[in-house]
Image 1 (cartoon, one colour):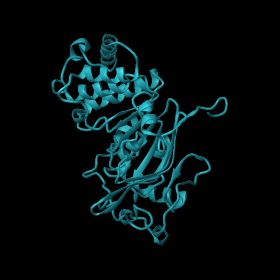
Image 2: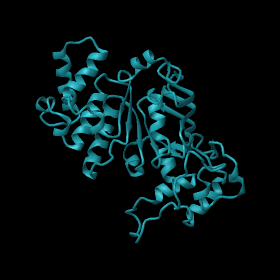
Image 3: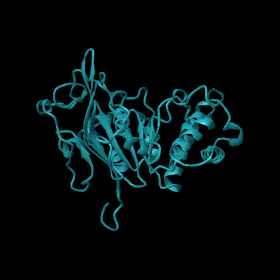
Image 4: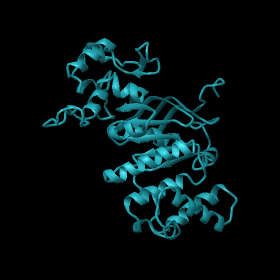
Length: 342
């Protein structure tokens, strides 16, 4: 716990590395990731597909363990070291103190069981309550997440619900045991923009009213602006920038972050004929580039980028704003101002 007057740290991840042995070689999916989450905070982890966002979250939940996986580092959550925890210790944490909303609610929900029965099963696995009490709790949760007619929908099968309602049902299940941490993995994927906005508003409401800490994993940096307190940008298994929402959005320090922000349309500027895009493709994690992983796609790369830059703070006025780039803050601002980085 922190000193009096400071917000306590709920989750601390240090030097997390996750590799998988495959027929083609070793995939280094997560490469030295460090994260910190305060109580009641929303941390957004942003990056392209394959950047290691979901693997990081799944590893903290103990869901990447297997004979072909190699995991090192630490992830300390409410007094429990998750990386070295036994399966029994993880079962006490998962669902109970830390819950996760998975990417695809249709495949996450069992199609042959009613939605309410699946919520009841989770409640009774961790709490000594009757089936009737657990069912009533399920109805209350479905109502809390905005599903209409929860007393009827509790008996619906997953295929009888829309995509947005299935996602809400997954949120209800994740909240069933009043966890202190919710990991939401791409919760708005494949949903139309209206439903996306409703779900983000729901998550924000839960954060404010239930003091729920949230790790939001997304590739949509536009969603981040609506809810996050802090942002961590991932690329090819590494965090390349981390800071508050305002720091990352208004003074981005890494060229990859410039590219992500440049892909957003701006209502305060003339409409472009074509949105800028980051050249090239994300690298294969079987054979990642030497040095800075973003180097082959970066228009500002130079000789020093052949070595790996540390994740450091370089701004005296923003000591908690970290980035992994050798350019000085003055060079970065100069190149952003002339439009090279967007």
